[in-house]
Picture (cartoon, rainbow, N blue to C red):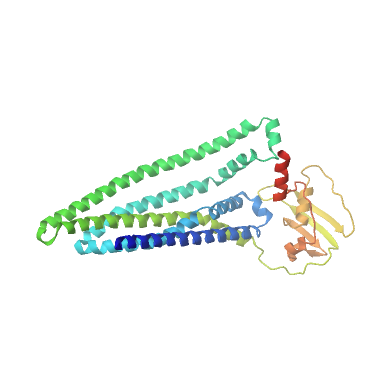
Length: 383
């Protein structure tokens, strides 16, 4: 009956711990995603045009939505309980022979080294193929995008895009298999080493007890052997959890890297001027602009004045810079050279978020956002 009550208490304790770990990890993941979206709102358009920064954003999004927070929280909680178990067995073994405690660490440390090494290798692999993963995701999304499907079907592009996606997917699979093979072979070697170590320790315990047969009973011999086995198992779990936390922290560096990027992208100074109630004039004074990563000027030495009540039509061939100028006028980009003046003052002196409330713009490639009502109407029409 006592054993049954103890088992029930242990199960209840484990269930409660699992519940609180899961809740804590879910809250942590939500906070990370909230901070991520808030940080993205403080980036500028030029940041999204930078492939390196965009890769950082994608990696941060993946980590905020992954199970890494749960693994870290769970690992920290489990380490404490396993350390208590390991310490208890270690005290028993140390009283019998300090050599067994040293052997216990000698057996488990290679396991830690192995997991840390391959945890870093997995991180480096995932980190290095971010650009290719974005490309594969883009190609895959084309097959379900209603805007691109008509062109793909009528121009027979399906096989071409599928082959492009398949080449990347196959490349990822081969990389994963290669890493998995190396890890599996290494783990098999560690398992053999662990069994040999346990066998050697058990033999050592038996021989020492036989040399002092009068001082030890068969029950004590079994206790020391089981204590060593239990200590090794508990310490191996600690090593595994430590390596798991290390691997998780490596991936969370992507999230931390994003936080650094969004802080450096924020304006260094606060707006100096109050946003005017009415925009009387917008002036481009010697405005030039070059997109990040490009050597060609999209706009060069533009001088224009737009006054309240006037209608202005900009006409030009494709690529002449009409859309670029519109983006500059609403502050999506800052001029590479020159100034854009609002009521005679540099646009950068105002709070751009408040200034945009005084403006309206419809882009050429505008977006129609879906709503639940719109989606249900489409589904009813299809049926």
